[in-house]
Every structure is written in structure tokens, then in C-alpha cells.
Amino acid sequence: MELILTLVLWWAPVIVLALVFRAVGLAGFRPSWFLTAIAVYGLYVIAIFKGGALISLDQYFEGLQWNWGGKIASIAMTVAVFAVLAMTTKSVSRESAGFTLRQNPGSVVPALIATVLLAASGIGLEFLGADGPSMDPERLAYQATMPGLDEEPFFRGVFLAVLAAALPSRGLSLLRARITVAGLLMTLLFGLGHGVGIEDGKPFISWIYIVVTGYLGFGLLWIRERTGSVLLPILAHNLINFSGSFF
Image 1 (tube, rainbow, N blue to C red):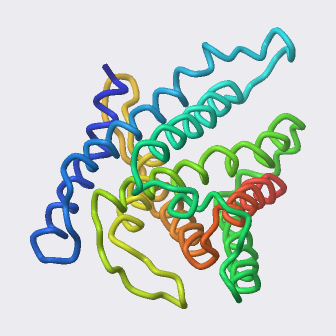
Image 2 (image 1 turned 180 degrees about the vertical axis):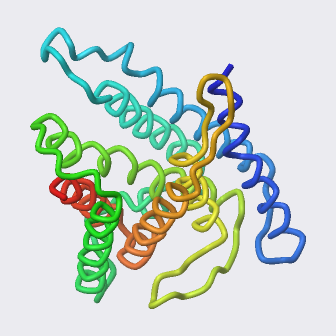
């Protein structure tokens, strides 16, 4: 029940904003695709929080503290959802999901610069948080792999493609990256997913987590749209999380 209520907390502002964007003519609204986006997101959340019970790694690696099983389950879910949608509709494809190694011409250097800036921002935020370094080998291995491999193919890959089909918009060009309504709302959900939830039966909100993850998520969105691929966002995401462990 808490999981359902959490999803409601995350999606309520997104639904309101989607309708506002439609009302003012900044985006279209395709109900069937919007419901698909909600369903796909729900499957992802279930995989993250419940998938670890299905993919137990404890029998191979004792004392694991991080959610490896949930991440692996969500990666598998993303691949499965993409395969189904790509075979049944033209709105989701390798190109629309960014599942390509090809980078847009002239995009690699700007994307690498953005990656360095985001990683530096992450380090700066770690300093401000004053949590100190964490050199636990499992944490380092997890942060160097799982965040990017899981969240980028989903959020800035399949989910972005589905949400773009639900909320078609022209968007605007930001330093040669097309930022659409779907991209903005996906970034909002990314931030809410890290800063809003239910704890001990009561809703909580952390504005700092929403702002920080929203900022980093928008930077990763820019890299994704500038390059046309999720490859560099995957590497950037892992670099941000990994480098922050040292400060």
C-alpha cells in the first residue's frame, strides 16, 4: 500500500503539469500513451523495490548491503519493456530511446565537458553535505556500475521515449539539445523519486534531494539529447556517483 501511495505522490504533480502544458498549447496529450507511461514507471518501481527478492545474490556473495538484485531486476524489466514496445509500436525505437552507440556530430566534446561539470558539482555537494569519504569496496563497485546502467536506459531511454509519445511537443533548443515537455516532466519525476516518499506511514519531502537530483538529472538529460544516445549519460551518471564517494 505504501508503494502505491508513493507513486501517487510522485505522479500527482506530473499529471497536473501535463494537463497545464496541454491547456496552454505547449504539448499534446495522448491518454493511452500517458497511461502506458504510468504503467511502465510502476513496473520499474516494483522491480527496484521488489526485484531483489527474486534475484538473490546472497548465496553467491555474503553480506551484500546494496540493492544489487533490485537494480538487476529493473535493468531486465527495462530491456523487456523496450522489446515489447519496439515490436508493437513505431513510437518507441532504438533511436527514440537512445539505444545507439552513434553520437550526434559534434556532440562528444560538449557532452564530456558537461560530464566534468556535473561530476565537479557532485563533489562540491558532497563537501557541503560533510558526510566524508566512504571507501567501502561494495559501495565503490555499486556506484561505479549500477546507477548508470539502471537509471539511464530507463529514465532517459525507454521512459523518455514513452513520455514523449504521450506528450508530443516541439520543445526548445538549449545549446543544441532539444529539451521537450516530456524531458522536463521526466526530470521532475527523477527528482521526486529521490526526495518524496512515505516513512513510518507518513509522507515526507526533502527539497534538497529534489533540487539536487533534479539538477543532475537535467544535466544528464541535456547530454542525452545533445548526443542522441544514453551511452555518455550512463558513463556520466556512474562517474558522478563514484567520484562523490571519495569526498
